[in-house]
Length: 216
Image (cartoon, rainbow, N blue to C red):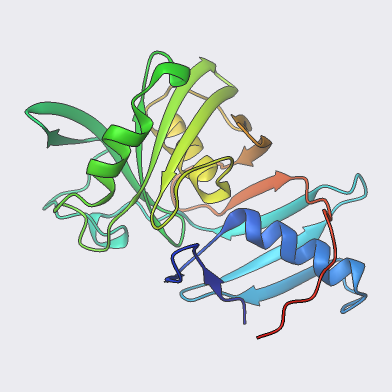
């Protein structure tokens, strides 16, 4: 079992960056001799593979595209949904990567109002379980830049599931082609997604920063 807790102490369904770090931890501690390890999260089983180039690939499963998967309060499935915030309308994609994501495409991610709009959208009434909010800029058909405002954490340097959601949203809207490189503040990820109903593969680094002990 693989359990994830945000900085505010809340247990969450999924964490792509955490999954890659878990794979590195398993390998570094020789906890398994297998190249690929399956782990169970709160709501799905994912596969972790350490490649020959030391990058880690994670089979994140099939993205949830139905409103009930996310969940978002909408009667019919759509590639985008109109959400009103402070008398302004935003067209967002709503996607589950095992956890809920909203993705907005913006002309310039560096100047996007991530904290202001992210905070409002994260707790919007359309999302009964709240939502992680991604602000994505399409650089070309195989390259996105992304910033993410996460539930229980605010803006973070990287979000693996957020990168997955942004890639899915871009491919759905014919803004990008798989594989997609997603650049975040903390580094780049590659997302492979053949299309609806197919599993998604996230690939990126996992580097041991330090070892320590915590007394609980």
